Length: 342
Image (cartoon, rainbow, N blue to C red; front, side, top):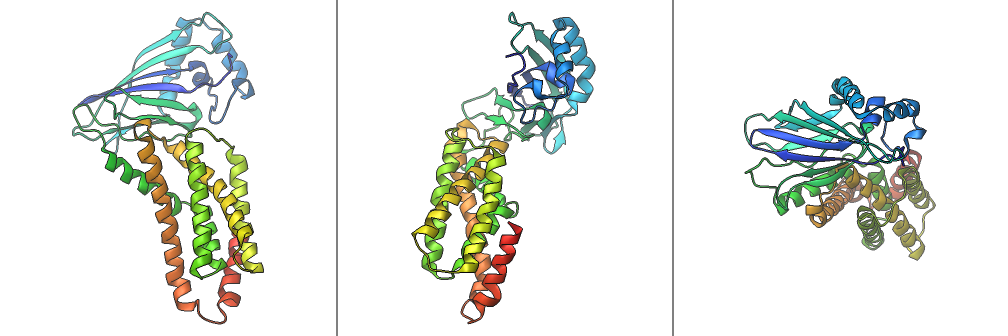
């Protein structure tokens, strides 16, 4: 329908010294200044009337309006190479009139820019308010292709004649991304894992819980990344916070490891997997490296979780775990703090 928000599509060609970008987008939304981040229908935007007025313009007039708004739109583009911003020149704008006025009107925009010397790859991104965008590098089978949302950046796109990122390089990059999502960025996941740690210092309870959590979030991470499961962050994030509170309260109450605790940890692991998937959705997962990226990210997450448990054991479990006052003076107060933070 005319007001449906559709993803833009950018085809990127990276040469040895210049980059050319062809973008298919809905110009009326950008010129009207509509924030498309998370929006499904422009009728729901405060600028809906302005959008309708622009949609009614003839193509030639709309081209003029877009060119007039270009300086502001250009400020929302983020194209870099070797850490330097790549200035882009607007070379062509074509508003393609739809035979059916009830459909969004497509505008083709061609941009070009000179790259800094060297062979550093190009990274593409644009403002979250411009909405989702499919980015495709025009090159070989290993070229980047991804779906970017929330202002996320593409993977580095190599210049023509420069070898594309190897499988192992891509794997290592996603391992780092997964690890960083736990340490230092994943306070919610850190709190949950530390909550599992304070339930018991015995290896068996910890092993059961961590295994259940790992299996669960691996399943939903894969399903959500494949698009087979989709739950809004407005639902997932509060439930992740609830999971932190729950494990903390159970730690305070005490008890032995049993199927109920393991089942609850498994259920909450499913939620955390959806949270992990949102990260992959934000950074973009290249179809050419889909399995590599998925496995690498998951490995990074596991390494991050193990690092958290290892630090907790070295700082708390090893020196104080055998003390008769450990639970009363450390485990319970720590769980109270974790629960309150959750």
